[in-house]
Image (cartoon, rainbow, N blue to C red; front, side, top):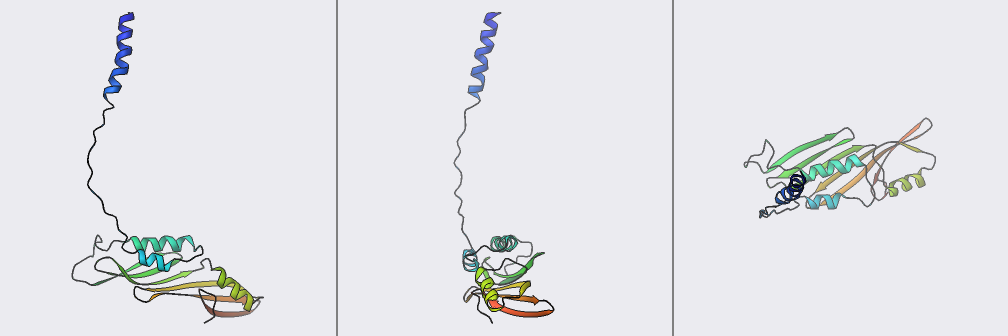
Length: 169
């Protein structure tokens, strides 16, 4: 009986050791490149933007036109709409999947500090009730950002436009 237990005990150690032999395989090389890094770098703000805005922008930058169902080699430009409840982005891609231009519109986003302080300095008794963030990106021209704000002070309503630096338009 002791011999049988000893044999089972030794087998219990040997069998798992045999199953631990790992086969190594050579994997093929993978090349990762960012097609739309220029869009993300130029549209990025120094301050924290709203999370839905950032997430939708990342989806726009990561979208692969070539793998979409409507891709054909015949077209030079593809216009794709991206929607979320807070806003939308219309992006134009070339046939290689690079973003040529975008038109973005978001409602009730986190305003930059420069915009908040500019409005507070010029309109101290007013409160911002609604805001619309509009951005236009062009591959060769760059980015324009502006904010349309609705201010209220009691019964009075005022609508203003401000750029990203807090300059009134």
